[in-house]
Length: 291
Image 1 (cartoon, rainbow, N blue to C red):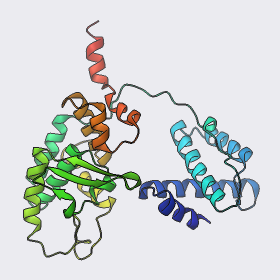
Image 2: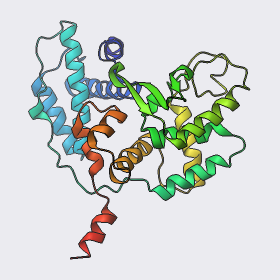
Image 3: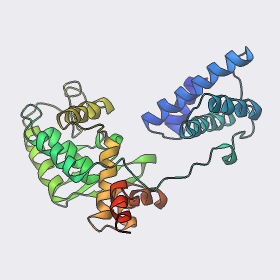
């Protein structure tokens, strides 16, 4: 049943690989909980059972954010069961989710100085050559998701027009503007890449993918960023942090409108983009001290 659920998420919902793995894992854990609690296999979702599971998670001091994610996973599984005609109605409703008040103080923002330090180390890394600098530049100044940057094909790049064609979530197409830093980083890397004997159509290649026509995976992203996280002595460094840097930098420093940032980042809901207007705690402290 769960394998069918995986196919449903991949083919019908077109979810990302991370979402598919996360939802699959959540439903599998619920399946285990159900079997241990009721001594029988899970066949369909029952509201009372899900409600008791939610209370079970609360009793274990599971964070509200994690509980909501697990409920989202089960609701997606609920959709699958309805499609398979195993049950007829949705048992998990919006009211079942825990309401979380969003904080407006954002401490999880990487600074311009840290980004410059990362670029500095990437530029002087002889082994990685031009590839790492290009990869980091696109993440910082293109605002791409990990799944988007790994799937860039050479044919998606229009250097002369300063445009990058991206297929984002839900197979939605958008055009990302290539700024000067990205332009020279991509140009230099493409010149170097031409010396590599490969027929792989994707921009970024690794030792494993060089003789294939497949894109690199998320582990490729993590390996690169973990290297510079250690070199720069940062607490964390991942694709979404650099995507967040782009959104915040575009709104606070570059003068982009919310609509322009939403378009560049591939947000279908403008409220998602508004999160990048959150103020850093340090800025709020500086303002508070002026009172």
